[in-house]
Amino acid sequence: MATTDDQPYLLGLRLRGRRVLVAGGGAVAGRRVPALLDAGADVSLVSPEVTGSLEGLAQAGRIHWARRRYAAGDIDGAWLVCACTDDPAVNAAIAAAAETQRIWCVRADDASQSPVWTPASGLAGDVRVGVLSGDPRRSAGIRDAIVAGLRTGSLGARRGRGHRSGVALVGGGPGDPGLLTVRGRQLLAEADVVVTDRLAPRSVLHELPPDVQIIDVAKIPYGRSVAQEHINAALIEHAQAGRFVVRLKGGDPYVFGRGAEEVIACLRAGVPVTVVPGVTSAVAVPAAAGVPVTHRGVAQEFSVVSVHVPPDDERSTVNWPALAATRGTLVLLMGVERLAAVADTLIRYGRSGSTPVSVIADGTLPTQRTIVATLDTVVPRVLKDGIRPPAVVVIGEVVNVAAEIAELVREMPPGAPGQPGLPGRAPAHRAGAAAQATAPETEQA
Ligand SMILES: C[S@@+](CC[C@H](N)C(=O)[O-])C[C@H]1O[C@@H](n2cnc3c(N)ncnc32)[C@H](O)[C@@H]1O
Image (tube, rainbow, N blue to C red):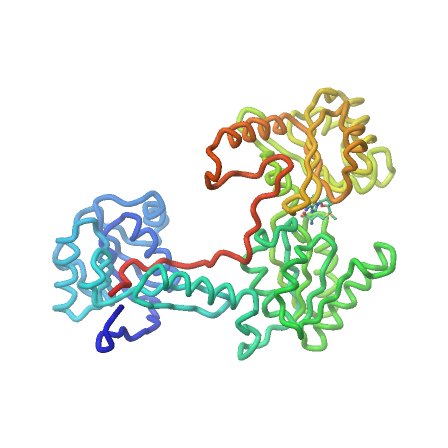
């Protein structure tokens, strides 16, 4: 911990167009440079070698890279210097030169010798948070708590900010609240009104302040098209009354989500709309059951099909003979109740009855269930196991890859980290979004 007379003075540097020298091209520089670029700095980097991502930035012309060791004079004209080479003697020389020229210098290798400490920083909406506590881990923990609080609204992001207006269509992901995007959470935390669906991640609604009005459209007592008119009308009415409305939808708003209809209705009424993409169940639900929708040498393509009408229905625009002819993966949404017709059609047009099929219900939720069968056997299995919507059906050889992954996971020692989703098991639920943040390296007493 810094002593009282050694307390740092916290500033926000506005670096747009100003030269910053970064000496070193390793992991520390790899973390610093993107943040400097985000601040608009004119970054010069000196290092004989750099990481792949720094090389990519140099090739894209975003930084100036001198491919050599640091040399006297490199800091000339810089407003800030980051000494993050792997040689303490070089870092010390850079810091000494910077001191002589009265240029602020961050020494990554030795906080006690560094005139500048980098705070643990994070961003929640338009609020930037910086924490210095004397202990980098503690600072990062406090930063995470503040950022999470701002994002969920528990720290009162709605007070004292410029009030948002209009409508944000937010893709909520397949159900696990951890799969709601950071942007989606930020907008939710600022909402005055939330219009939500049956398949949206409803558990995040409990985090909202009590004065936020929640309209549950699953409870609108009309048929689908009338309900849609009511939803559009509610979005427009609340937005025109000056409230910021978040329309929280399951998955991605533009994947069988009628999102564009809502956007068009709002725009026609003169209401501005933002669309925040979401994690679609078409990919995430198979993944939660260990099924990759593509896999090298197994499937080079995947098709996502809505089966809200069966294949022989005159309203169906799906080319089922073409789908049956492909070796790619088929992902069916809204398909459980019409699975018999789909299986018959695919087999009739040439797909083998032994093609593997996985049906995953309540994907990513604690109630997730998975069955694995074939085109020939899937319908009796679904009936026998009582699988109900919402479910995603995956048809294709990729289903076998899940078995291979599951076998490898079973062989892992108990408690090993990072186990991917297993058939029939939901991934661990994580509360809140991970903080988007940079770790402090030199911030310690
Ligand atoms: C009207 S579509 C909406 C799709 C959504 N916009 C998306 O991108 O995921 C609803 C269908 O998505 C699938 N679905 C959505 N969430 C699911 C979940 N958690 N588990 C299984 N299927 C899900 C089901 O097939 C369900 O019938």
